[in-house]
Length: 118
Image (cartoon, rainbow, N blue to C red; front, side, top):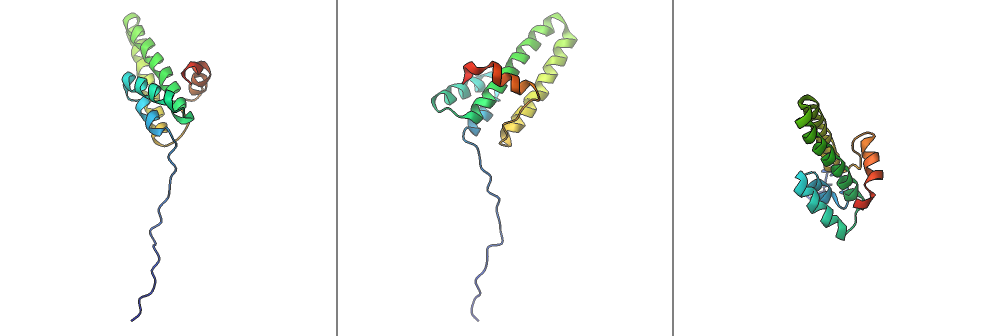
């Protein structure tokens, strides 16, 4: 019996990974990760990574303010820290899913304010 040609029925969806995705993810891994991502991105500029580096810089500033506020007003500092944590998770998920999105309103402002990080 002659064998019939078979078609490969396993279709795979090819997702494009944006250049700089690794740098973007590293930026969200603590302050040290942000510094590493910043210096890696300085050599080979990438818009995806730059977007997320600026976003994380803004989140780090919010966390810094939250730490200072905890010494003055514990409840306000805790709420601000929790908000920053939730925004960090959202931003990290956006980087992991290849999206150049972030925090509504704030990410747009971070991109405008932190042009020195380009």
